[in-house]
Length: 102
Picture 1: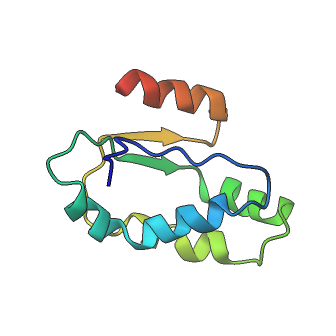
Picture 2 (picture 1 turned 90 degrees about the horizontal axis):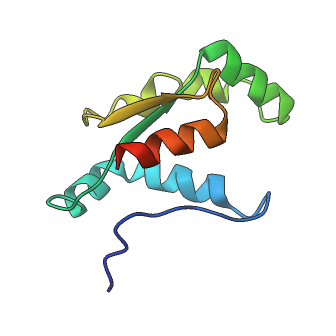
C-alpha cells in the first residue's frame, strides 16, 4: 500500500465526508500509532461552543451533538502541532494557515 503522506477529504455535499472524518476521529489513537515516525501535522480544529451550536441549528442537525462532543473530541491525550479556530477564520484562511505550517 502506498504511503499517502496526507489525506484531504473532498466531495460534494452529502457525499459522506463528515461521516468519514468522524470515523477517522474515532480511530485517532490507532492512526497515531500507525503514523508514528511519519511526517504528520496533527491539527486541532476548534470554535466557540455557541458558534458550533448555531452551526448545528443552521444545518438542522440533532440538538446537543456539538455540546456533547465539544470536550470529548480532544480528550484523546495526543499533542497537537497547531490549532485553527473556525470561530472567525474562513475555511480558506484556515487552510492557508495549515499549509504554511507544513
